[in-house]
Image 1 (cartoon, one colour):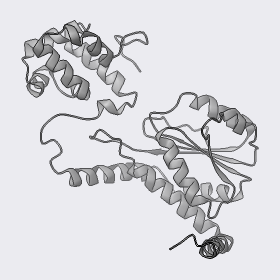
Image 2 (tube, helix red, strand yellow; image 1 turned 90 degrees about the vertical axis):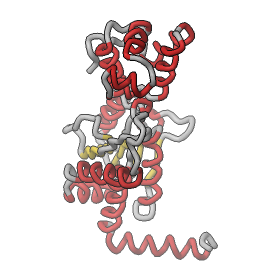
Image 3 (cartoon, rainbow, N blue to C red; image 1 turned 60 degrees about the vertical axis):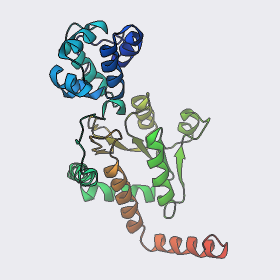
Image 4 (cartoon, helix red, strand yellow; image 1 turned 120 degrees about the vertical axis):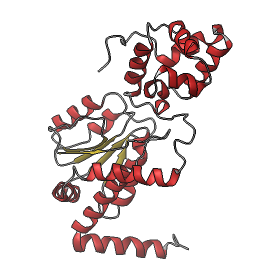
Amino acid sequence: MKSQLQTESSPRFLDRIWTALADLQPAERRLGTFLLDFPGDMASYDAQELARLSDVSKATVSRFIRKIGYDSYDAARRAVRDEASSGSRLYIGHAEPGAMEDVLGFGMREEMENLAWTFQRITPDDLDRLAEKMLSARKVWIIGQRISHSFATYLRWQLVKVVPDAAVIPKDGESMGEHLAAMTADDLVLVVALRRRMSGLEALLREIGTIGAARAVISDDSMEPDPSLDWHFRCRISTATPQFNHAAVLALCHQIVVRTTLKSGADGRTRLRRVDELNERLGEYD
């Protein structure tokens, strides 16, 4: 929810800086350039701390804030927090020296925390029911756009060994309507919807629901739980780095693949052997 000072028509924080940059004094320009690289620091630090990080005076910070159109530092900070909540990774990185000295150790702790948060909210029964539906569905449709497309492709690549009729959509140049028209109530549609999500997700899920197909969604934790879905898996992707941490998403995808493979039983094992035998004869492997 946007603050009262941040409306749909208000210029974005970074746009305000770009517009004002050429007319700023040298110290103000240094602060502006700093915030273009690390806008998230505006939300994380008070005016005195920001002045120290950007090597300017506190008075320069106050003048800069007024010149880009805010009444106060708090007003600018609220605007930045509103924009950061949209999921832009521009607001994630921080300039504080030594903040991530132990990069590997920090990253592992972050991933373990995200994994714990995610799997505390998922039951084995949830995964088993999804696996059973994947195996009984007429067709499995896996939808993913932007970064979500990578995970959709991974899921299909692994599942196709035991779920022959699985497809990733949309491909380049295709519209969703072309695929929706081919769906039936006997299908399963799994939507990977990680931020920043493409627009139209609610309408898409509504149309799939009208068709009667089972609906599963893998989202990040910024998406509110949707009880109308057959499955909604929320993955925590929190990070203190410039890139979202998708470890929990990949771990969930792996669990879905493993559960589905195990549930496929003798038929699945037979198909896996057949795939390997054919690839051997075709010289697919070294």
